[in-house]
Length: 572
Ligand code: HC0
Ligand code: SF4
Ligand code: SF4
Image (cartoon, rainbow, N blue to C red; front, side, top):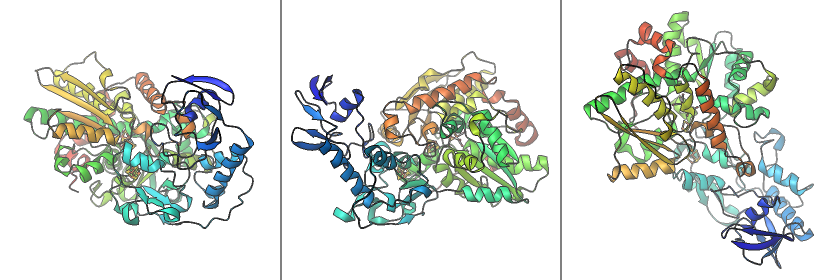
């Protein structure tokens, strides 16, 4: 350990601790913009200045040393911080009132905390490009601070490297190489760069107006479905504590917005388990196409297309749950209700920006109709609820509509890392055994470790070695071990975002300083598992509406009809 004094308070911290951390532990809040715990340590914004003897120095990269005397609150420090922030603001598009990060903007917060009342410098504005070339991600370069948080996220955590620093000096910018539009880069649309951005420079492509328009059109039959992870995060947008489950309130609010039916994507997840579990058993029996890799995360699918095209056949042919559900809404449900499917508009509420891209993929359509018409993020639906003047926090809970309203606990855990694997094992085991089993929970695939493994022996002796990874950097490590032959598996679950969909690129923003105190992944995952425990049905094949859809429409898993509607093939 080392001993130092910060603002005359003596403290002892482990060697390697930064002055910024040491100060925070003493309850001294040094403002920062570029610092993102465990991800970005570039000291590029220089807002976190402190006095170390005669020097003014950035505290986020300054290692605490024995005998240091640090001052964080002198006239000189306060003035220098203010000047730094004013200089950042001088080159920033300050249309705050109409910015979608108004309220969650960390630059606003830092300027407010520092007491900035004027911007004394008239900066020349840098590149003001608004890039909407991607179906998922919009870049407003007039707001970029060059803090580098998005670059660190995309390169170090996700190992995609779609964006980086370009040029030097005043012309420095962040973007894809050669200043290409992001839609033409290797970006996989995960949106983790948005979650890292402290301001409104990176955003989702908004589709709120399209959905309002559809809702107002009397000729359209507009149905909505909600992903598992949305119900454990949406409350945060309305001031509720992280990890609050708001399923009932969410359903009630959606009904109030005017959707004709409010369905649950968890039903689609149950359907996916039936199809993918059957596919897994088939591959294990024939020994072909192993390991089977999950295909429900469109960020991961695009990652495979770009970086591991020779393993495309290992991806499950199953469409993702919300796409399966969209296909069933426009066929089975349309038939049942005698509605022309061309009139139906399917809106998916997802924690994810990549789902916007997925929704537009032509592989996910049928007879020229997209399975899903619009994808809105958790943040966008919160915006619509606010625009409609709905008092969300005080709503009385309601339940989903059938036939896609009933789901199992297995469907809901899809929202967290390990959930798809656990849900699949619950069903696959019983399909093979032919009788009910006590085991419901598979703890080995739970938790936030980067790579998790479990081995399950099926009745009859076949073995399913399962690996679960989250975060594309971890996925790259796993793929490399598989390609080198160091590891062998039958089944692999990959979610592009660390933590799984609960921490997807469309979820409520969490301030960098909150992330230092709260384990966002763990809080939201706890809520997901609580939702599963509270469910009366815990296994997908026990869902009576799943049994019904096979009896009335699909026949059996992997049937000819399910191949038409529920499966696809990615070719690149
Ligand atoms: Fe997910 Fe999904 S679990 S990808 O993370 O599989 O977005 O929540 O909706 O489709 O069900 C996201 C979350 C989903 C899908 C489901 C899967
Ligand atoms: Fe990188 Fe994901 Fe952002 Fe694309 S969406 S630039 S892959 S972090
Ligand atoms: Fe989207 Fe979930 Fe994949 Fe993240 S992990 S890209 S939220 S599907």
